[in-house]
Image (cartoon, rainbow over all chains, first blue to last red):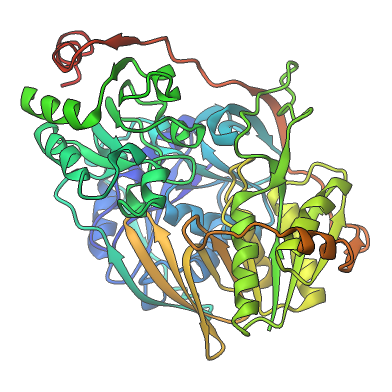
Length: 309
Length: 249
């Protein structure tokens, strides 16, 4: 059965999450096609063709797809998908935005946040903030899945030589338009791709104090994250949020600072390889998942850690 | 304009739900149930639109067994004008829910549909988008700001890289993220008044919607447990462990 994957990109380059989705597709097995829908997206399509394991790249290059509006891209993808057995996308805000629309147009179910491939029609995914893993079997002719990147090791971005085909069909629903965006600019690695993440919670007390974490992050080459409590309190923007409703991370090292460890936060980081918790409350639930726990005042411990690195 | 707001009955967010012993699903026996937090934000936004004079009527809809009427009453106590309960004791998956909501949309003809971006039980994050496709309506998912003017709605969305703003023609669907607003508490007199507000009951059969599930749950199990960790006494010991034992820095 052939597999169609929505490539995630910014017209210039392919987002790393696509590489994890291709890895999931390889576990399912079958010819893998990437759909690159954008405007002036030739560079992204070229990169897509080099991804290891990809057989074909379909390029829809039109102003209607410039900002990958769900209304337009879903119409395109649903049309293309009719020839495929599987439709996949990364479980990022882009994939989550577009793919359910595709599934509904195809009149099939979607399985969200797939973390395991059991067989051709059976998949695992977390529910209830990761407190349970559900195994579901799909009876639909086309299986639509969003893929949790942390559950699949990325395929190589180079080494492939897929054929590239242009799609001429233009789907412009004409019901939505792009106004603008404010994207966070950072020299640090992207949260979901970083091998080390240091996150702060309500215990940080304010946004300025996140400078303590940033200093450690710069020494370790880490990304800086936050708990929902810290985001809700206005310390830092939402794009830093790790958790059930934020980003899912699974770095080699996760350092939780001043984070109590609500189940909603644990849902976003408990698959990290090594977890460190620094919290002055020795009963904080974060210590139950931490490999190394340090009961200490973060305002003493973090500067000390910074000096020790 | 008329606003339709969808609410889901779920286990309270403070409860750590566990699988049933036989692995057939989540064990919800004696678990406190509540309105899904994202749906509560959707209700609040709808009520604020009414208070601003933008919305003329707020209709709260919930789908599920009879107990869902509790959550509709909660929405009515928060300020919704009337309720619709689509009653079904079947297991309803997101596609079926989206089809039922589409039927309600056809009937009610709202100009704006507000709903949560995801429910904290299934964590699917699908229904709003599916309804958008079925009703051919534009969607503003993961909304942190909603502004209505001149027959359009501007929605600021929380995306992985930051914030994105879209302009959607009405009628449109908006799914809420956490920072859209802070929901109010229902006041006791309003809870009393809510009991007298109209609540219509419909069925999937009346709406002519096939709700047969497409996915079968094979099993539900707890996630892999993490091995118990240790407490370190000092930063020096922590750095030593990370360097020499875990070898991650």
